[in-house]
Amino acid sequence: MKKKIYALVLLLMFLAGLWFRLYGLKPLEINTRTIQVHLDGEVVNPGLYSIDEATRLGELVALAGGLTEDAQDINLAEKLLDGEKIIIPRIYREEESDNEDKEHKQTRQGLQALSREDWLEIPGVGQVTAGLIMDYLEKNPGAQVEDLINVSGIGQKKLDIIKEHLGNR
Image 1 (cartoon, one colour):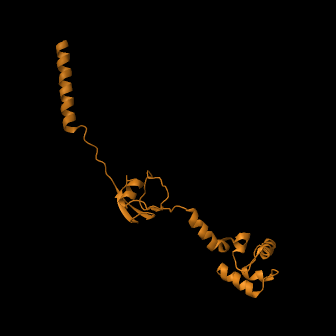
Image 2 (cartoon, helix red, strand yellow):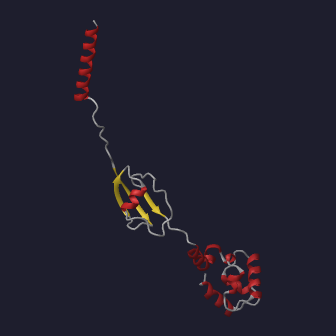
Image 3 (tube, helix red, strand yellow):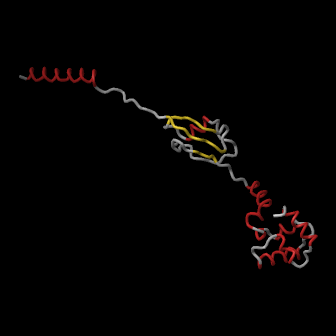
């Protein structure tokens, strides 16, 4: 009886092996989808890229020739989505911001953004006039360059110099 059971078990194992061999575990086919991502900003070759959907941002940046030296740190492991636009930002540099502040400070925040030192850089404006301008602007926060004619010690000639120095803003 034991021999019959062993023979039956061996037969079942053989048939199971044969079935798995013919119909069993086949490699899983992975269907990868192609997506399009627009990469812009601080990369060597910005543009539209067709990539596999499993591609990460680091691989896409490598396809685009890498980052420029002005690129900010980014998450290179970020997953990408079809139709996405990724802009690699530029590093904010202190010297760039100083130049931008001097050139555009008055247009962004008005004349009140200028310090006493900024006023002293203007030819013909000394300590006293700079103080009077600062006092006037404190009392008149929405004042424009033309309104400085109301400050004691500023005539049309000095106002023209101030306008020229501030870029008539």
